[in-house]
Length: 81
Image (cartoon, rainbow, N blue to C red; front, side, top):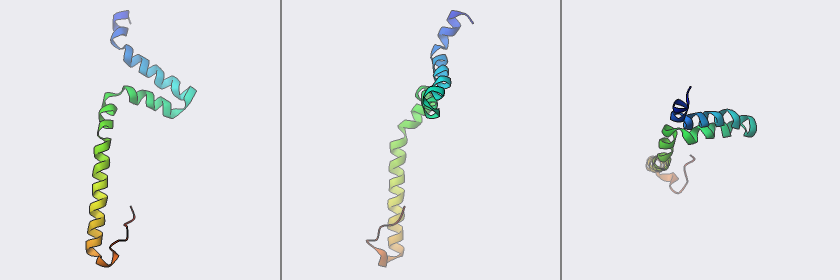
């Protein structure tokens, strides 16, 4: 490879080197983190986490309300997640 080719993939190369070295020095999680920090798909997915949490919270609330509606005698008793 010549220098212009290397310059075109420099970020990718740095990330791959970090991915290979970080687990040896700092553990598997850091190797995965190095890759995740660079990966644009993972970065986009992370932006959806608050929305996903809100959807999960709403689902738990709806399920609890349905359970209370089916069993009126258990109102005030929290439903186990």
